[in-house]
Image (cartoon, rainbow, N blue to C red; front, side, top):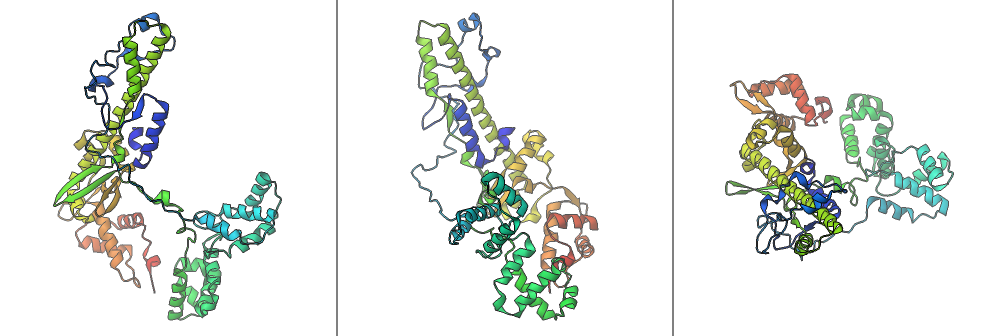
Length: 470
């Protein structure tokens, strides 16, 4: 179960750990080893304690670990022709770029600061998060400097340096909150016209009203006409709420997904393949096998040699177990994804979300013969790449909703239609939840207003008032 949950991107690291712990396991090359399929089965006698009896040593059965001929093909080797090796000679270019914090430190280096002030400024820069915000309290920064670097600094001194760092690029950097971030950006544009000055006033005096789209109150308070308000809003929405979010390699590891499966549409025939990283070339170490062969050929077998061969036998058993678990992982992944692909065949052929059928974990568990908890682990942690995009497997699972004709449809289909209705609405007069409910019911879906509100929230769509545009 633990191996099943390991993402494809992290499987290589997990295998590396096992290779380090067990010298009997190795990454193989082209060729084969000498272990037969039933080698995984171990007798209860195979559990040895460090203080084994003389009988244990005298009754070591190594026949299943050695073979006379070297031409027998064993099954304790994972890779085959279905999982071609990556081209070892292929060089993958590495993109070199300056990270967000390196860029800030470079700008800091252009300031003429003494050693003490430089360290304080570096502490501030180091406290800026990946979005470009300084969310750490000034008192906490002061404490860090005192305890970690033995530098006593006042909050006023730190605040002065923060103001200097806020002049760095990109505009809006080192702000404490969104309001300050947007105002810092507008200050750089004050020479661009009257609208920028008014936008500053809106953010300074009516920030909460602006975020809640209470535009009438802003108009009354500042005496703005409709066109003036529209120009001000355009000024603000062009600002960057995350000034550090698009620089360097920030957040790339979190946003990058390694697909576990690939589905191709070959002239109407769906083809499923498993990411080759899930099929590592593992096998039993030939060196360990040879040590057991040497032991069998020898005539003198003292206690120390027998202890050594028992240790070797345990390591080989452990390696066989791990290889078998990786095999089971592959079979479970392929079996689960194959069932999902067949169940939602229409979607994988067309990419149309409205063709998704109601599907729950129990449906796939019954098709695969797996436990529901096993299917859940695969669905929650694995991704499939299609010609229409990359999806987490749980995307394809949804409850059912009945129509006027009594037909069961996927809630995913209803959400897609709901999303389309909101996307096509008049943004000056957005649709209320009541109106959306009526429209869905007219299409034949038996749905309550509270369910529409729930689906809208799950789609991360705000209420009608917050979707309003001038």
